[in-house]
Length: 539
Image (cartoon, rainbow, N blue to C red):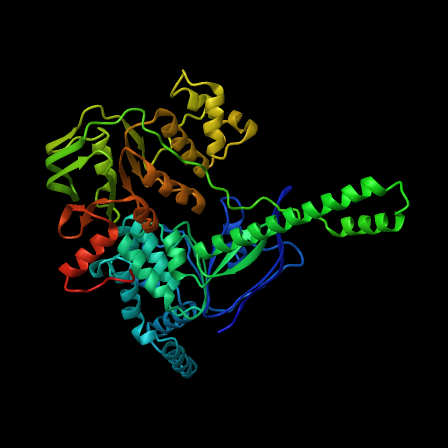
C-alpha cells in the first residue's frame, strides 16, 4: 500500500488563509483523525486530499489510485439497486463488471471481444468480484440496513439510510486510502460500534473528520490537528492530543516565566550600573537579555464555551409521570403502553435508531404533540427549556444577537447579556451581529445562552450536538453532569451519554420503547446478558 503525501499545500479564501505551506505524510496502517475548530479548514483540506479541490500554485497531493471518499450526494442514485450503489465504490471492479455485462448482452461476440471478456474475468477475479455482492451485503447489514432492502432501489430508502449506503460504498473494495467526513452522521449507537470495529481492522490510510470524541478515541492512532494554518501530528486519540497540547503550553509558559524572571534581574543590573565603571558587565547583561526572548504563544485553537445552566427554582420531587402512553404514526409505532416515573435530578438519554420516534417523544414532552392514549403529566413547578433538532425558526433573522437574547428576559442588564454571550464565545462587538448570518454552531450556542438566561428546571434537548465542535460538546457534557435539574437528551454521541446519563429511554428493535434505570454501560451489560453474551461491534 502507498502513502498519502501532501507537499507545500496552501489554500486561501480572499484575505483569509486556512492552510499555509502544509507538508504531511499519511502512512498505511495508521488512522488519522482530522481535527480543528469549526472554520479551521477541515472540510477544505479533506477536499484537497480527495482531489475535489485544487491547492494553490506550488502545492501537490500524491494519492494512490484506490482512494475512496465518503460522498454526501444521497439523491444521486435514486434508480439504482442498493447493492449496486455499494459495489460502485470499487471503481475498477465495477467498470469491469459493467463492460462484461454489456459484452454478454451482444447478439454475437467477435474474437477480439472474446479475448476482452477473458481479460475482464481476470480483473473481476483479482478484485474479488465473485464475492462482491456478499461483501457489499455484509457492509450494509453492519450499518443497520436490513437484507430485504438490499435488492430494492435507493429511492425506496429514507434519507438517513441512503447516507449509510454511501458510507458502505466508501468502505467497499479494500481501498488503499479512505477519506471520511463525519461518517457517524445518521448512525445509531450500534452501527457506530460496528464501524469502529471495522475501521480498527482497516490496513490502509484512514483520514476521518468527526465531532464524536468517543469515535476518534476508539479508532485513531494519530490526530492531524489544524492549528496555526498548518497540520500538527499527535500520537494517539483525541484526548491524547488535547493532553499533549496542554503539556506543551504549560511547559512553554513555565519557561517564559523563568526567562521573564531572569530578564528582570538582568535589567535591574543594567539600570543600576549602566552609567558606572562596570561597562563590560553591563554590555554582557544586555547581550544576555537579547538572547532570553520570551516565546510568543499564539492563541490555541482549543477554545471551549462555558456552559452552566442554573436552576431558578427547583421542581417538585416527582418531575414526570408517564402511564400507559401510546403513540403511532401510519408507518411506525412510537410507543405502546409505556410507563415511567422520573424524579428531580435524573438525567435521561433517549437513544435508538433513526426514524423510531425519538423526536416525536421530545415533541410530546414539550406539548407539541399529544398521545393517542395514556397520560404524560409534569410535576409541581416544572419549567421546561427546549432545543429542537430543527431549530431553524427559533431565532428570527431580523434582529441582533444581544437583542434576541434580551427578549427572553427584558429585566436582564445589558452587561449580564454580554457576559453570557462572552461565555458562548461571542466576544466584544459580536453581540451586535445580525442573527441572519449565524452559522449552525453559533445558532446552537445562542440556544444554550437562552437556557442559561431563563434557568429552567427541566431540559429537553433533541440532538443538541448538531453543528457543535468537539470542545463545545465536551463543555455540554460537563454542563449536563453538573445541572441540578432534570434532563431528557436525544443523542448518538456515546461520550456525551456516558458523561451525564443515569437513566435511559431506549427504542429497542422488535421490542419498542423501554425504561432502563442505569448508565449506558449498564445497559450494554444487561443487553449482552439477555442475548447470551453476543456483542454487536466494539464496546
